[in-house]
Image (cartoon, rainbow, N blue to C red; front, side, top):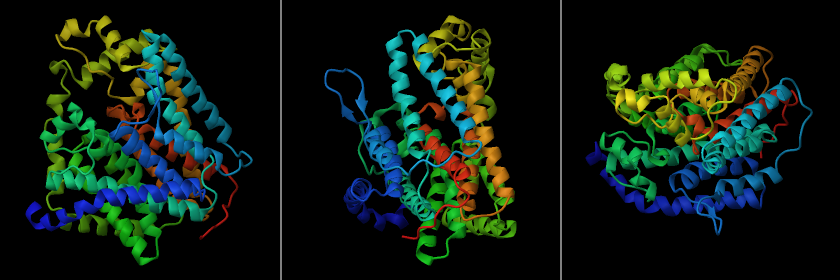
Length: 459
């Protein structure tokens, strides 16, 4: 395939200059034009590419560790220019309380880490960006026109991510250099022809795809103009191409769940026949452009029994077993925050003595990770916040239809898929995925709990 696509290599010289121009334009729109839609996508791009992939920030003098992330600088402008507060409608206050309880318990868990400094640093690195992301998104955008532009520019970010995977998988080329490429989490999987690219970890890229695909799909389904719709089709193809290249099982299964919901779930007025026809057409187009994708993705499930076997020692099954014991012994407040704290506790419980190997550095289940770090109340608060939000979305979609329904449907399905995806991994405790989920969470909450109609702005 690479031989047929070789002429595209000539375009590589334009990609980085194009990204620089796009970045400058987005900064100008965010800072000087106060464009919240573009600014929010810029914020997500900074989280993925600059904070995560390039692992850089505004370093503070005199500190060995610690910095101000560029995404947090962008968040400052977004917070200053965010839409005015609206009268709260149920269940906004309930969800706020649940989320703040969850975050407060995570912050307190740092004080039980040994040493405390390590726990505080880990919370600063992983939890504070999530709080910032929720604060940035909780008031949503000012009009339906802004939501439309947000999803349009989100597709631009998706295409940039897709280009990075495409160039890596097809041409064996790196678009942006980064020291993080020396991380084994990237090069080991790449040697197996599995690609995570800007996310480094292919499971994180898979979770991002599951979260973003439904909103892109719904936007495409309802777009009437030709060029924006073709642009959206490109983004959809890029997302599924990236998903196949990850060969990540949990995201593939979660993606199947989202497809079923997109086809058969309550959508607030979009006919099921139209949705299924659009999905069928999309699958046909993707099969033409990437034949054999199903077989390649399915191969990853052949070794599942071996990799999860308790006889392997260092596996998810044994890790979950020991994690359950720690949660049972520390049900209210957990063991403390951080991967180093988790591994110390695993050794204290005798994991290494029993299996002769070091344990995994995390439970590889975001729900167990929340409970073992901060206790069962933290996990319950998180689950209830999501349950109340998604329950309110279902009620909204089955009720009277308004112009925000399509955005509600896409965001709700994406969050549902993401919650399924994190059952077998730690995306909820990552720098480059968890904040994106909180942005989508905040946008959905805003749409569901603000005035019945958002002023339509087509500018």
